[in-house]
Image (cartoon, rainbow, N blue to C red; front, side, top):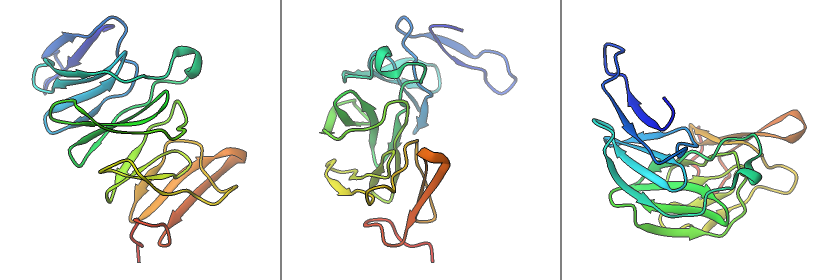
Length: 180
């Protein structure tokens, strides 16, 4: 359904279809603590049980011209914060009430999303920010940065890069515990 937030329930039948602002669900959602978070013309939080709006937060998402045929960045949720990438940087919002906690004016790739692990926000390119205040923790060496949405597992960061490469970091990356 276009313009609706839907939940199909256990039997596959639609349990609810809550309206969203016109053409506003531009990202894949994140689900945490009984809420659905998604990016549209704002950052939205809705109740998972019935789709009721909990809060909307203003930030500057990427424009359609910036995105081209890519989708909007999906939010990431952990440590009581919702992290989202938009024009002008990376933004953190309080997951409970939608208040902006910090903004980091770092360049982040549109069409990618952040990952959160071990108190760090991991961006495409493997740039690490502190989840509490958005301060820069680490940048990868020149020529060894990923360009797509990262994943973090067992103390390692992995991201696809240009030139048909997958990059992996771990152990010596500040704030990322070694897997051994």
